[in-house]
Image (cartoon, rainbow, N blue to C red; front, side):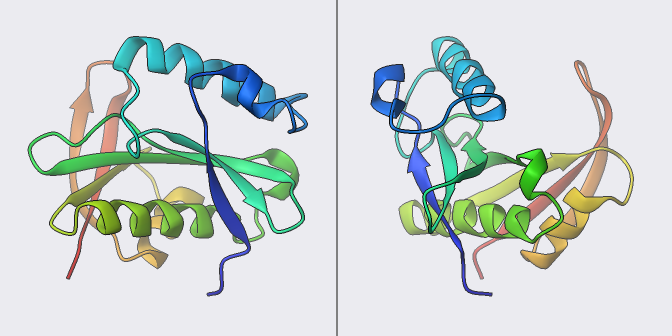
Length: 151
């Protein structure tokens, strides 16, 4: 699938993003990301990204949940409500995966979902992730873990 999105790094400086329409979901994403950076640090390329369409619209976001640990990096992604169910989640996941393997070809990529078949599990399957295991997360409760290795 040809990607209709590009990843735009979310920097630590909110003013770097003033050219975007940050009303609504984009602004919430920026605010939450800056708070997250304060808690976890800022170590490019293992940061958060806006997903931008070819025409410049922010369609969602994707992130690495911190730098790799023990050879594994966790990803997360979201598609803004207006753009859901159009394949953009699959593209955001694919772009994060390409970026991770370009930076560290030997890395394992982890993603977590609710313990049910849903849009997110289909996105991961389309991107070559496989179900690894169900775990009890102290904050989230029961979740499913998905892995992808660079083959």
